[in-house]
Image 1 (cartoon, rainbow, N blue to C red):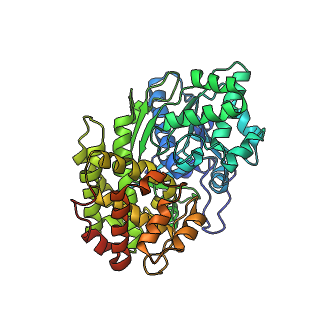
Image 2: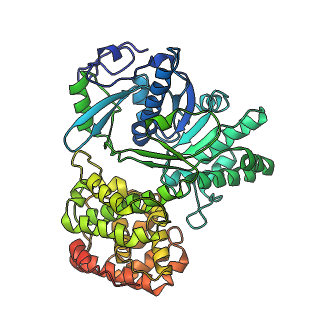
Image 3: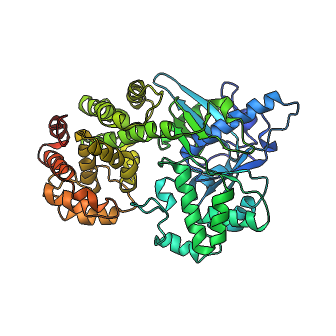
Length: 513
């Protein structure tokens, strides 16, 4: 426990175990003794989404289990938060004994809840020994991760481990790896060498078949070092698929100010989120928190939920992001409340994405309408440049997969083609006719995209061909499909000559079939 000292900027004492008793009773707090909570989960990628979703639901699961138990000691489901790349958030949380605030922002009110499930924090580059001490500890039953799709080091075309990726090549030479895949395989090797049961590896990233993809990447990495380790992982380690859904924007100074006003304390690491949340998990064996008591669903097959979410929410988010950025908007709410963009996003979901979904009992029309309402929430400042970043990795599962399905079945997909063209335009860093994009996109391929795109930025046909010729993003087969190339050139020409609204007006349902 840290002794309270006042923050030099706000003059307020920091949130910590020492100041927890000072939090007003109106703020929801853990009902258990935070200091008594022992770790049972290691989470890689302790960012805003994890803290507003899994860590929060784990707290509520602990509270349910504790209420039903005869002992006041909370079950051992504390979380060890791990960062592989950036220490900033972890440093702030360390100063707060792992405590932080979730602001649930609805259209009309904001509710605050303090979360105390993060019980230790490890910045892996500085403390690899501490990280692997946790990972080989049999008390750790679950290793979960939110590292974004790019953190899986997958080849864009095969969706298997990119063995030639510089970070993977570097990890293969290290005893203390630095990538998420290298860390997981090292963890499993340590467990195997000691004759210990492996933890369940739980991906919570927006990736098609995330558990399957993660399992294959780990088997591929392990087999590059030791075939028998790869075989052991394939036989003995569970990698359940999951679907997670909650909009969690980047934390702002407004969030920090609102927490300070409500609590009288300085929280350097709050997170804000919409009221909606969903977590669907493939059933697995072994001990786990009572997540189902908090609204999580355990199912035999996550695919129907995953497909709906990836193609409607995540795909729709990309449509809104790239068209919204070109229209000069900054947030999802601003873009979706722009009638032409909001209408196109709904049309994209109903006309082009819904027909590609597997049969299920889901009411897809109702889900799409619910998404529009969620996106319009003025309490959530979800920045478009954040939603649209790393598009070179996101396009495959969120737009190109459904485009392929529509082409196969003879359905037009002009909204999808317009969204892809808008991404190409955004990726150059230019709006049209050489004007710079107000909010530049970050992408793992940014340098390549801007170099290739910039050279052809004023010629729609050349620009489309330049992007379709990038094997890092597109399978070469896409450029050989006339409907795709011609549809993209038409959309790009409309964007270049008349801007977003002209391109939307030119986006007719019967084209590009």
